Image (cartoon, rainbow, N blue to C red; front, side, top):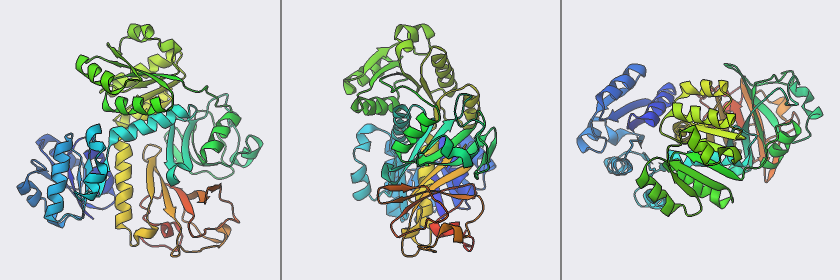
Length: 457
């Protein structure tokens, strides 16, 4: 694919990394000459310095020949304008980052009337992920498939966890739930385990199943957390707005601490069910005054990664059950793990994965068998993908034990109707099934790519 990325900020840089590594021809446009220089030096891409909504700049980028134009600058209006001009110039697909809640409500209009293929909102997606983590306290991270019917949950094994020193072949002695441990991160290593794999303390396990089974699994293995009823959020960002609004629907009380007076006034008008405090949430004394010790969860949403990490560590030391930090730099994820922070949310990674999944679907030979959902997990070392079985899928109704699957690929779940099936040798694929695949192989475009006799790359 020929792809033009407008904006070399955090999202643009990560997209450039993903898409150039997948072999696409990528052009990056940004006003900042230093950013363009850095991105060209790091990746095999073409860089153009200029305004991404300028006709001459888009002409220089050959937008008329582009398969996809992705506008991810910090300005919603510029992204919308750049997308509209690119579409009129002949770009096949256009994707825009739109963060403002007022514009987000117009997503259907932007798609249907202005021709955008996809509207992405990193802040809303990050709020969704944090909400899921708060509603499932024993999980570090939760990704959803099949419209929420299957979940992929990351959990950290501690000394008290009943899984510690248990081989996966003995999992049924610990829990009878219908789940599958499909990946394990141990220090810097990633394993797609078999039955002989023994779980150790501090392993991160990635488990698929229905929400009900996963909740039961957490109880069975000893990861028990009480339900969260009130949350303190430091930083009155757009993510904080979306999150507080979502939590209010769940009956969870939120208190937002924000330094900027004007932002506090704005939030107090938009969030009648939240308490808005004008103060410096990075001050431990302020946190104590606002009842941090009585709160069930803490979320650090300031503009500084380091500040969010420090604040969540302080919150844990003060007795908060669940601590969550927004971290935009992948290099800091290792630090958060060492510090015992419960969950880390990276908005740019969430939407970059969504875009990669969308483009894989468009780039596949047959879109009806292509990727439905894609997540990059385990520090981007593993992909979890969803496919739908149709008449073109190979080996229909043949037992999985008789089918040769490529190495480093695991069938992590089959959804048939509303029933989650943990795959065993005698199970098979049927038309209409939703299949969850976990792999370190990378670059799977369609379900048939998992089979040993498939040569599509």
